[in-house]
Image 1: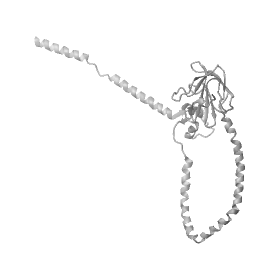
Image 2: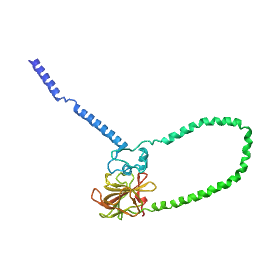
Image 3: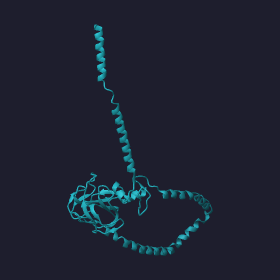
Image 4: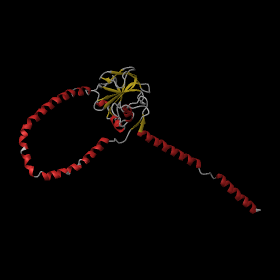
Length: 295
């Protein structure tokens, strides 16, 4: 009787221990693998998107370069796009890569073709050993050739005169910048902060926005996220100026504007604050506008 009770007691213990044992979290491990795979896919897609950009309606090469902080000339060279840098919706623009130099590859081929010519002068040197004394008489006539050499110098001095006339207009367009709007700076530039690529100037709604410097409008639209109604003007010395959060744009792409010309009416940022966001780019990179604007 005791043995029977003992066996029953042991069987109860075995059954209770089996019921308390939990199975391995197979579903959790599988779920973690799924998350890891999805994370890898998203990261690979992000890297791919950084290499190429698909042109949308309203995009220009300048706006794409502005958005990605790349000089428009660099984008044009990478994608073999020539002036006036026209792009079309659906076109894929590479953001990085090497520039193919076809012209430089052809030049060394022409130099290689001239190698056999170097063998013929060796034969000529053997035949012209005796007439080596003849070149001595030729330098005597050099003073006669000097007067004609002076004449082209006079002509070159005359040709440089129009170049002098072309240079003065350049500094006038690069004169001191002016403030694009009257108001107090409420947010300054900070290179280490992505959200502070320019300055914010407090303004009244529909206040006149002026071109800070003379140039050509290369973008006028609302296709850049976070900038609202945006105008970008190209200046000399590879400089760009940007005027964001306008209520109304008054200039179109390709239009030439003068310093102080009214180009837009000020609006509000996404939070509803009336202001003008102003940026200056040098070689595609943001720079501090306060270094250009008068104090």
